[in-house]
Length: 79
Image 1 (cartoon, rainbow, N blue to C red):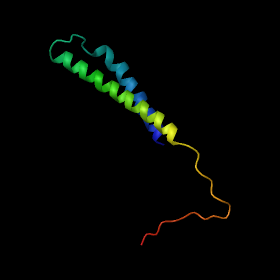
Image 2: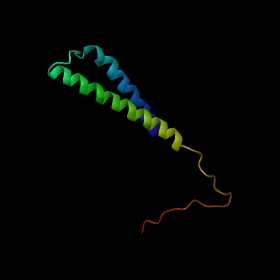
Image 3: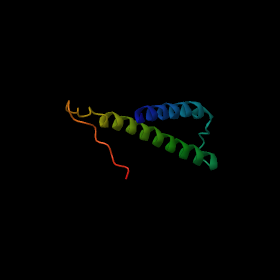
Image 4: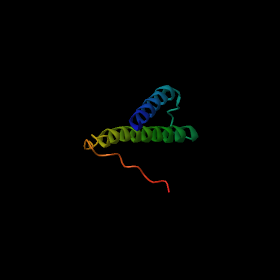
């Protein structure tokens, strides 16, 4: 489930970069330049974090140990 969420956020971040990239001012003087630089850095951090989460979710999703044929599932007591 988490792998799908990471991939969805990754694709959404790529779409935002694709949509906003041409509209950002590339003159690095003044407030517009600071905004462009900070937005680009944060967008790259979002992409990297979601990509790392996707890779780690694939590594953590290993095979579950099988139960023995006569073994019951343990339930937690609520009392």
